Length: 374
Image (cartoon, rainbow, N blue to C red; front, side, top):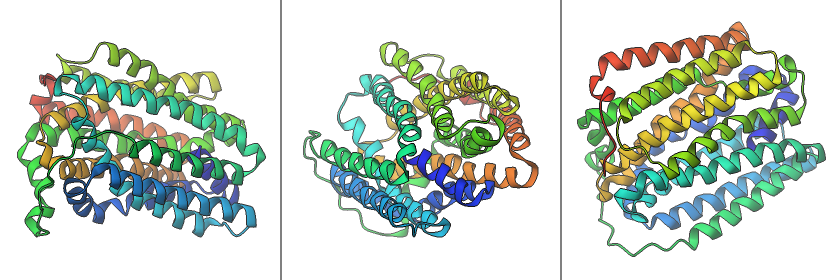
């Protein structure tokens, strides 16, 4: 809901593809310096408390968007500034939340658990954009107010999660401790290959920042059309996550990973050239399903290969990789669209994704043959 409201409101104010890309950039920039701090925080303190504090901060930032829309002072600079605050909160929330899950289920259940949690998230990503587009007819203030309330509800639900108390290691704040997550990943060539593949593939292939342009200028729809486009990847991801929750991936994870990246690139190309809303929705659905498959494989392997006392720091670095691919990918798409046009930018991204998949098959042969085993 929040993404639809911010994207439509900002594009209505400025009509700039570059500004849509800046939304991703200002969310990404805080992740870079905070990664080395957020990881030790998740390993040293109660991860539930960290997530709750971040959710409350996100509620406050979204409430500021609502007030600014209501009183008419919300402009380009203030929107981007508040989005940056959201980026700071997520820089701490994501590693703590990711590191919490393996403490709640056994390793044998982890892949299925990640698929189940993802199914819930994708359901929200289907319902949310549709509701965001519909409620935007009542004004941006309505959407932001609902989102702020949902953040607070999320904070309450996380606080109710039962997690056995554990003695947190006292991590001294030294250069070695801050960089230990990076060092661990560098030593694990398989993890390095997994994370870097996702980083560059999604960085080049991400087209979601340009959805407001496609909705208004290419497909000739309104906010409701943007809501459908935002929801379409989640529909595909939800369908596949339900399958994977029942039949988790155990063998041939490597070929499935590369297959999902190739399908992601092809779906991006189809979406880029489409001028039909139904075809665009189908392409985005396939794109979402393929992205979900690679994400579950990657997250499962990261959690299985990482000891619990390191999960916060490793998850923080992982969040940096995914933040780079998602938020910085949005900026790359917006910048490229401002230079060569939205359609050309999407096509360049799809071709780039296919080239990255081929290169990583050659540079990381171990990625072609690994399995998921607890």
